[in-house]
Image 1 (cartoon, rainbow, N blue to C red):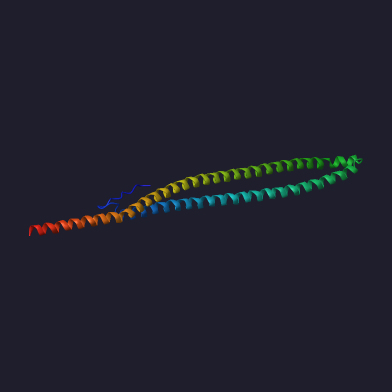
Image 2: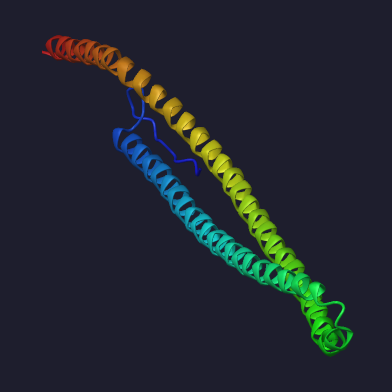
Length: 200
């Protein structure tokens, strides 16, 4: 905060206009600091809201992938049942030989489904972890900046209160100084009057 010069007046204390200007300037600076803090707080809240929305979207993707996995597992279960039924027909070697290409294709399909499921889980977990890390960094940054601004604001408020107490003390002493000045003026007037009478 810039120091504002306060001129002293003739009979003790400070110039009233200087004091008022100093108080107004200090109040404006404090209000500006508080407004800046509020604006930054709102920006960080928007960032948190955006990241939360992204996290919600990623969780929805994870849920969708899980549903797809369940469907594939159900299809796999149905295929397993069909294969078990085919085991009953094992004596029919010719039929088994004919169906073997289909069984091999099914095995490849199952491996492919497993790879897709693993990749989907890994991608969803990576996205969720990255979003959570970014959200934590944003929260930590907001907390650090908020604490710094609050410390600055409290320091400014403390300084303003100190200056106001000084002004209050000076205003309390002002009547005494004015009474003393009045007494001195009365004495001076009496001396002038006495001097005039002596000259006459």
